[in-house]
Length: 164
Image 1 (cartoon, one colour):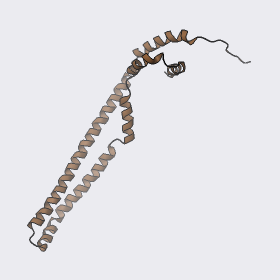
Image 2 (tube, rainbow, N blue to C red):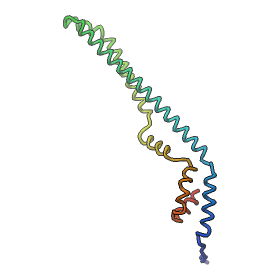
Image 3 (tube, rainbow, N blue to C red):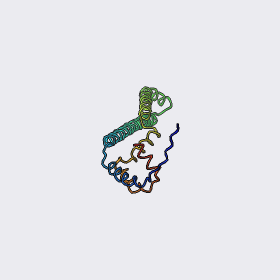
Image 4 (cartoon, rainbow, N blue to C red):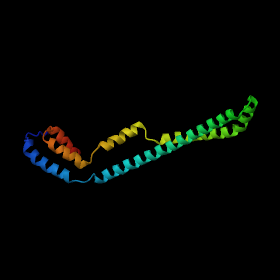
């Protein structure tokens, strides 16, 4: 046996009162409030982490710049104080451990900068967070939907209702 439905109902008769009540209920729901708070917290923590990492990177860059300035100053003093090539070589030899230590510290700071830079969000993560920021809370989206609800094709409205 095969059953075939041979009746139909005018969707407008049911759709208008249903839509009115449905949109009222959507506007009353606050199911996404906790999620919205969670998203706000996540975004705030992420922004704080990025700010902290950026500050730390700036400090490291400043320290590296200071090291370069110190090395340049030491070399300038050697040139200034040396009266001959022999004396210049002697002063450079005396300053070599200090310059070597400064250079080692510079390299160490460069490694720290690379570690911190790796902790910064990647471009695809940033794009995802930008999308999250653009997503309005559920009630706001419903308020935006209400004026256009009746203009949407029935199939679209039906899909929206059945997805909830």
